[in-house]
Length: 68
Image 1 (cartoon, rainbow, N blue to C red):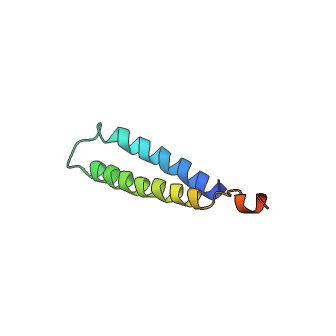
Image 2 (image 1 turned 135 degrees about the vertical axis):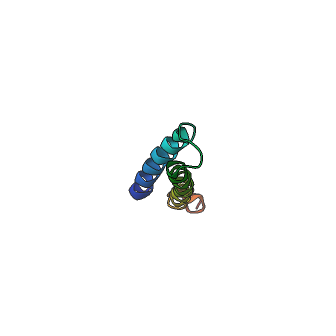
Image 3 (image 1 turned 30 degrees about the vertical axis):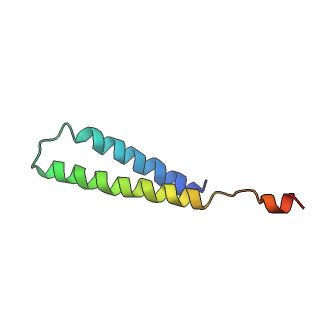
Protein backbone atom coordinates (compact mmCIF):
# COMPACT_ATOMS: atom_id res chain seq x y z
CA UNK A 1 0.00 0.00 0.00
CA UNK A 2 1.17 3.47 -0.82
CA UNK A 3 2.58 5.32 2.23
CA UNK A 4 0.55 8.44 1.49
CA UNK A 5 -2.67 6.43 1.22
CA UNK A 6 -1.85 4.59 4.45
CA UNK A 7 -1.24 7.85 6.31
CA UNK A 8 -4.38 9.44 4.91
CA UNK A 9 -6.39 6.36 5.87
CA UNK A 10 -5.03 6.35 9.42
CA UNK A 11 -5.71 10.05 10.00
CA UNK A 12 -9.16 9.98 8.44
CA UNK A 13 -10.14 6.88 10.44
CA UNK A 14 -9.02 8.64 13.62
CA UNK A 15 -11.11 11.71 12.81
CA UNK A 16 -14.07 9.54 11.74
CA UNK A 17 -14.14 7.51 14.96
CA UNK A 18 -13.63 10.60 17.11
CA UNK A 19 -16.41 12.55 15.45
CA UNK A 20 -18.70 9.52 15.55
CA UNK A 21 -18.24 9.25 19.32
CA UNK A 22 -18.76 13.00 19.77
CA UNK A 23 -22.06 12.90 17.88
CA UNK A 24 -23.74 11.39 20.94
CA UNK A 25 -22.17 13.79 23.45
CA UNK A 26 -22.79 17.15 21.78
CA UNK A 27 -26.13 18.99 21.93
CA UNK A 28 -28.07 19.18 18.69
CA UNK A 29 -28.41 22.61 17.16
CA UNK A 30 -25.12 23.97 18.47
CA UNK A 31 -22.12 24.98 16.43
CA UNK A 32 -20.11 22.08 17.84
CA UNK A 33 -22.70 19.64 16.53
CA UNK A 34 -22.48 21.03 13.00
CA UNK A 35 -18.69 20.98 13.05
CA UNK A 36 -18.84 17.35 14.19
CA UNK A 37 -21.26 16.44 11.40
CA UNK A 38 -19.09 18.16 8.78
CA UNK A 39 -15.92 16.46 10.07
CA UNK A 40 -17.73 13.13 10.03
CA UNK A 41 -18.71 13.61 6.39
CA UNK A 42 -15.31 14.84 5.26
CA UNK A 43 -13.51 12.00 7.04
CA UNK A 44 -15.89 9.46 5.51
CA UNK A 45 -15.08 10.80 2.05
CA UNK A 46 -11.36 10.72 2.89
CA UNK A 47 -11.60 7.09 4.06
CA UNK A 48 -13.32 6.13 0.82
CA UNK A 49 -10.75 8.05 -1.25
CA UNK A 50 -7.78 6.54 0.55
CA UNK A 51 -9.25 3.08 0.18
CA UNK A 52 -9.74 3.57 -3.55
CA UNK A 53 -6.21 4.92 -4.00
CA UNK A 54 -4.80 1.99 -2.03
CA UNK A 55 -6.78 -0.50 -4.13
CA UNK A 56 -5.62 1.05 -7.41
CA UNK A 57 -1.95 1.17 -6.42
CA UNK A 58 -1.60 -2.42 -5.21
CA UNK A 59 0.96 -4.29 -7.30
CA UNK A 60 -0.54 -7.55 -8.50
CA UNK A 61 1.50 -10.30 -10.09
CA UNK A 62 1.11 -10.79 -13.81
CA UNK A 63 0.06 -14.43 -14.15
CA UNK A 64 0.03 -14.36 -17.95
CA UNK A 65 3.81 -13.93 -18.16
CA UNK A 66 4.47 -16.67 -15.60
CA UNK A 67 2.61 -19.26 -17.67
CA UNK A 68 4.94 -18.85 -20.67
